[in-house]
Image (cartoon, rainbow, N blue to C red; front, side, top):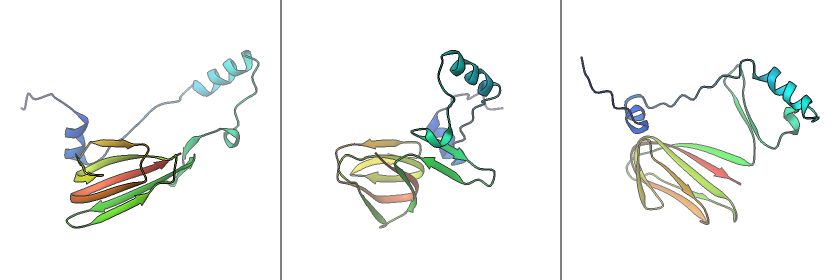
Length: 136
């Protein structure tokens, strides 16, 4: 039996290639409704929220936010450039492999946040699977 019990986000991603985020809202809807009513506030209506994320039963995801999400596979001489409009930000997450983002080397589990830049350049991939978020 292996006694190594050290875990890191990078080691999990390298071995599985997946991140699962789970949370439970059991019982919170009623408690939140009571707290909202007690504070004299009207109930929240999903279509009137500033931002939210909905995952449907069919697996589709709706993001109610000024964001664009891109997924890509890069290897060898592949190169991708995402132009950013002034005032927008980017977040890049490497799920598998390695690559450079605007010249910064990243590998599985790494992330990069970019502000005040006109473009995001993804290149020099080695079996890279990457997510790019273009955010307001």
